[in-house]
Image (cartoon, rainbow, N blue to C red; front, side, top):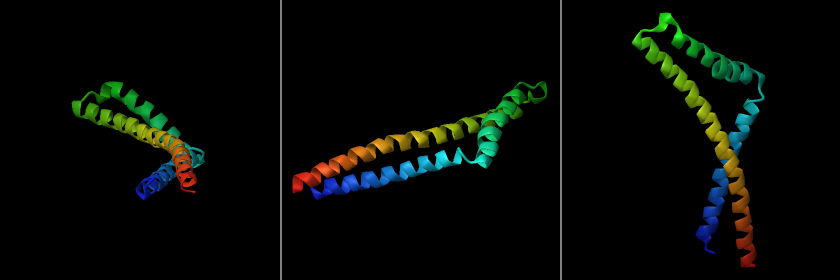
Length: 112
C-alpha cells in the first residue's frame, strides 16, 4: 500500500476522533444539571410547549406574530436536530476509527 493510503487513514482517524470528542462533550453536557435545567428542560421542552400554546392563543393571531412563533418553534427543532446529528456522526465515527485502525494494522503487517 502506498504512503498516500496511510496518510489518508491517519487523517480519517484524526477527523473521526474529533467527531467522537464532540459526541462525548454532548454526552457530558446532557448529564450536567445546569444544561438539563436550562437547555433540555427549559428550552427544548418547556419553551417548545409554551410556543405551541401561544400559536393557538387568540391573542396571537396577527400574521407577523404567527410567523415569529413558527420561526421560534423551527429554531428549537433545528437545535434538537443539530445535537442529534452531532451524536449520530460521533457514533458513526467510532466505527470508522475501528475500521481505519484495523486497515492500518493490516497494511503495516503486510509491509513487514
